Length: 466
Ligand SMILES: *Cc1c(COP(=O)(O)O)cnc(C)c1O
Image (tube, rainbow, N blue to C red; front, top):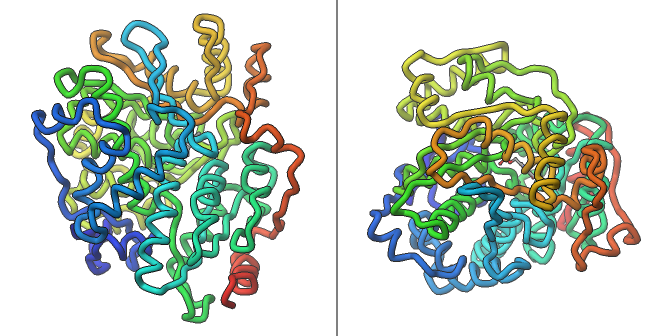
């Protein structure tokens, strides 16, 4: 399988290089040159498979011959064995034909574990083979950081630097990152917001000279194709569990960086019958504004009760724009250069096409709290604030009640106790046993100014082989 850049200029790469590269040299994101397509018959034959067997079938075409099939199977078995539920991604029923898929049964309690537990193993496998070392640089609005650290902490060939916005992640999220021991793990709290962190990471990928040519940067953000790839699997899993592919499904996806929902869009293109995909945002609603009015315009970042979605610039949206523009990299490049300067729109027929693919909704903090309370009262089931946004958007946008509506449950409520308290429910979410002593563990992190030179200097001083 070959991968090409959404901006049309960078060289095409194979899976191994895409895994290690992150951002393409032209500033674009890598996407597969062509997608595998599965027939209904083939998908039907996957009923009853374990999660890791299903993951192999869905992902193998993307990995191709970069990793021998037996090695890849073993890696997937190990990856999904660390999840705390036998079904890996269990479904919980809220109402008739309405479900939450719990994607938070991994070690750090958010859906990011599905991809990052695998990514750590993939990286170590490929780096061992190449006798190579990389520096991971990543920005996190909270959950990516801990999942990346947990996924990569045993990697011998990796130093990992995670930037998070200082005092803008929940205490549980921060502690999940800063209490992990390992001399290859470095947490940087930036005096800025998530977009500042993301911008510094992007700029560093664009110009890696500060590393002195001695190593290269690898990405753990969803600009890394391997993350998207791993997230396609659970759409198939949910569908198969509820009678797919012989009936179609609707999904509602809490979204910030457009990664998870983009994976759903790909699942559909790969042959899975999906009749509705709902983009669920919080008040940082650039995607919802685009879908409703064909205006792609950055607004001031707002801090909400769903911090993992407090994102102004939605990186992976570029991957969709590439498809909407008939895979014309030049058109995407021009559009995004203009978008950096002010509001942009796309041609009306392209936008109408986007509206056929997605519905959207934006849910504010009040709507989030109301939904947490409502579901707790009706179902005695506690939603985290991100999942609550998904459930609310699912109900607001639903088109056909005979189609199962599945909201992706992106995080465990115990990650966001303050939001739960604010919603007014009296139950307190409990951390699972393996994290019960989180508040006693020693933390390690460095606070730095919102200044790229200082961050890069910190990295060059601290990576292992420096
Ligand atoms: C990362 C995250 C999201 C947003 O996912 P994207 O792939 O960035 O759209 C939503 N909810 C939670 C809990 C997250 O950690």
